[in-house]
Image (cartoon, rainbow, N blue to C red; front, side):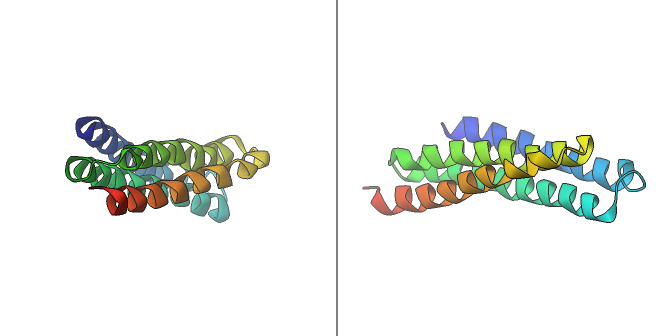
Length: 123
């Protein structure tokens, strides 16, 4: 399981760098400053949680609770839903996608809580 989260974390971090470069260079003169900030928020949260997957990978080798692995899946879901909805909102100018974004935020929160519980409850 740790290998899976390391690979996904590395890929997600690389994609975050690419998305950040695209936002900085490809969107700079094409979208409003507010939309560019929205895109950058998606990039930041994707990178934070890509790095969180490295923590999950390490924690899964140290702690036995299945909640640790569930945390990784929540982080992955959060990246797809939170960051993905923000990227699509900016790229397609579809405001209703903003209503989906909080679901990704809840997945991030659930992931952090599950990680804490998994570490705390492990034997």
